[in-house]
Image 1 (tube, rainbow over the protein chains, first blue to last red):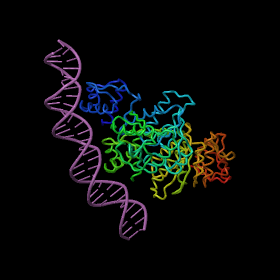
Image 2 (tube, each protein chain N blue to C red):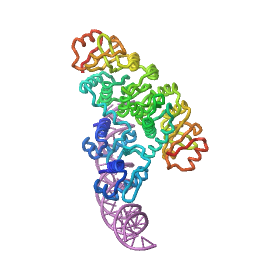
Image 3 (tube, protein in one colour):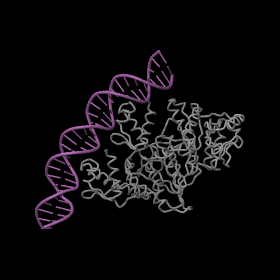
Image 4 (cartoon, rainbow over the protein chains, first blue to last red):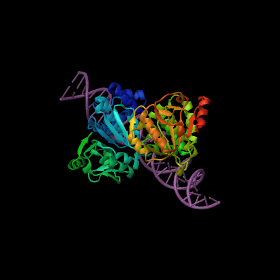
Length: 261
Length: 261
DNA sequence: CCCCTTATGAGCATCTTCGAGCATGCGCGC
DNA sequence: GCGCGCATGCTCGAAGATGCTCATAAGGGG
């Protein structure tokens, strides 16, 4: 019984019963109460559950009922960022998405939201992406129109880049570009680690009426060298609640609409 | 046991069990734990798995669908057809692949063959495809250069079609187009059920120096209305051993190299 | 045929995880 | 308001996984 399995078991119980009991789970999983407590505290720090004396309860802000623990870093933060981003997508919009774990979550959130709102045919959202994994997931979701750019695949990131990608993008106009980035700060703007990806992202931003950056707090202290766009070109910035207020104020002052998911 | 074979083995286990154990895989594959750890870290950097203490777990960032695809009809026939097709792909070739269960098998066979032959860098095969599921699988399996066409996704077939697809294809030259079709016979040639897909397939065949059709026996008695190309444009036809000899003779007479997998 | 790059395995110091014990303090009943 | 019981948080030690380094093997290129 490793940590991952325990956390999943705990989330399953909470999803089913809305609460867990430390003692009972310790017996059931064959570990000490200390361990269960540590696990619950960790989940609580990620705002996935709320601690109570003797156990924990489900948080009111439960986004997806079948809560599955994703071992990726900053998973809950990304889910909340994604939910906030999805809310800003109006019916019928044409949305560009680049690759990355955050934007993958955004894609899922947009798809879920379209189902939830039961959008009419003419209000269907169109998603344009150069991320193979996002396309692969969205293809089966009927109520979204999916368009892929062409291009050569980069094995490390599941993104298509290169001249073919640029060609495709140059033939498309977007209402909104939602970009995950490797680094973002009030002075340097948005950046990527790979110059090929940066170029594609720049172009996608240029084809869009509005530009949204989605990034968890780690990206604000990260460094990357390939420039995507300046802060002045960014309309929305969605992040989590672990970002210094000073940074957010600077972004607001620069004309960016800042939203904390 | 080289690196690629190990990585494939690890991915297979993760796809099946949702998790791997460092120690167990080290024993099973006959290498040291350090090596397994290095492999898992590399996969983790590609977001294909998430490291846990003692092993790794699936990230769900796009590794569930390939499994669904494995259970196809006529599976053994398709696997043999695919293996025969893969053998006709020379090192360094630029190969076009359209969508479908047969061509998905072909993609896997080509990938496996490249691993088995341990192809040098300059002999890497380039695969150009408009099938999202194929792209998704091949991105994971590396050591193949992958190019996607752009286009709008068709939910039923995982294929990209439309003007963007045509535009991309018109900028590409192929050594070989490997096409799965819905119907093929000595008189009518190759056909598809969907006219959009047929158009893309026609274009792909037109961009290629050689055209190969892969189809199991059921396709020879099937009917479809959208024409892809005439028999005279087909260079190779790979099928299974349940096809009437008379049909094969007619195809040979028409100048098609017929191979029974 | 030789050299250089890369991959692999072993050893070692470090870090993480987990369980147990103990002082603390929260909450419930009186 | 008060005291008791129990969950909690913290610390410490043990077990084991990890990362790092180095030596060696293997493979590819010239």
